[in-house]
Length: 450
Image (cartoon, rainbow, N blue to C red; front, side, top):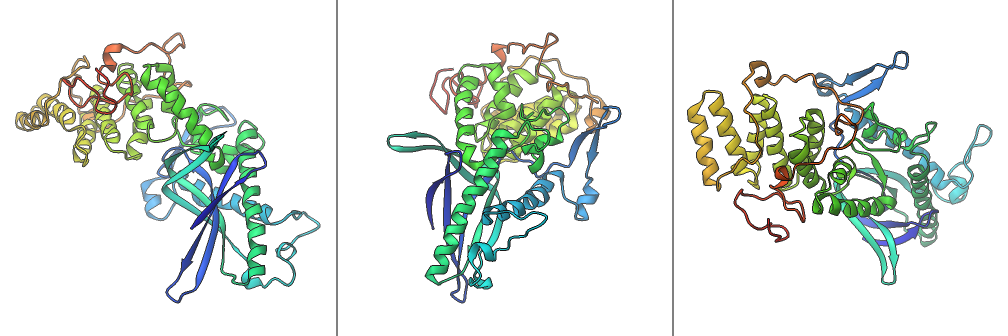
């Protein structure tokens, strides 16, 4: 394996790599490629999208049912990775290879690129890979010592390139000239779409790739991601991660609620679940923003990060409990307890004991109360009246809540309300890490005093 840096037409750095594979018969194939696109958050599971009726402006939901999926139907998220991006890639590969694109009068073949004498069997084959839970990085600054880059594990990374098995040196040199320049063209076209066409209603970048943001009727092209995934060219990923890291310090280090909102809805990388948990526990649960909570915590749980995703399940259970959805709350808390990191062992057990006591199951309540004490105990720091048990809610029905156009994060005056310091006392003011015990004096992550 090897890698090297090229530059796009915008002057950003493109990392191209090659790998050589050998089969059982000793035949070698080279894959020369580059990471082109990265999804910011999990989305391939999404089966519901919102549409707007162009006649009356009414918003309606379209769902791909579990029965349809069982019969082979794709989710809306898979439409992006299995239909939209592969279809777009065909055009990108053609533009990458062909200096003079075809039109209605002329069609330029690959023979014009590689030469009439170049054997057909030696032509490189275009390849597109959808890599799940994969690492991607991008440079965002030049310094004397070299490039400064930032990277992250992301739910989907689209890799594009060519494979070839030619052994003749002249053929290899010809192939490498075409595909290295071709990858530069592809990266430049994708970068141009991201930089210059995200708000262009004729050819919007997010629509062409079917970013998950397009599933939300409130989404405005090129604006707030509404907590949903969007596609980022990997050559721009370093810039996106750098902005995330800068604003995350304000969001978590300074208890800045406005920055927490931005980060929870738009940030990229491993710190996203941390800021989501901070915002949910300190702001959204007290404000009863249930639909926003569901969207953000679903993302955080699906990112499947130790401690923080477990914490998200516990916070989700608290939110369901506050709504009187006892059945759903029990499900979330039990999922938190089933995780191997046992991060929410005490907290989830505490709430389960409370729920079962309210539901008239003293034996179960005592079992979870004992489990809570074994894990170190838990002090409830969120003051809230215990909701009445509603059988329909306990069985999992929803409350019929709808989103506001702002995502439900504003007060009546349209201004973000200041969070209550008392509600954030479970989190380190320096790095945002949740204290594992109510009696903890120091942050386990950064060592700061509580």
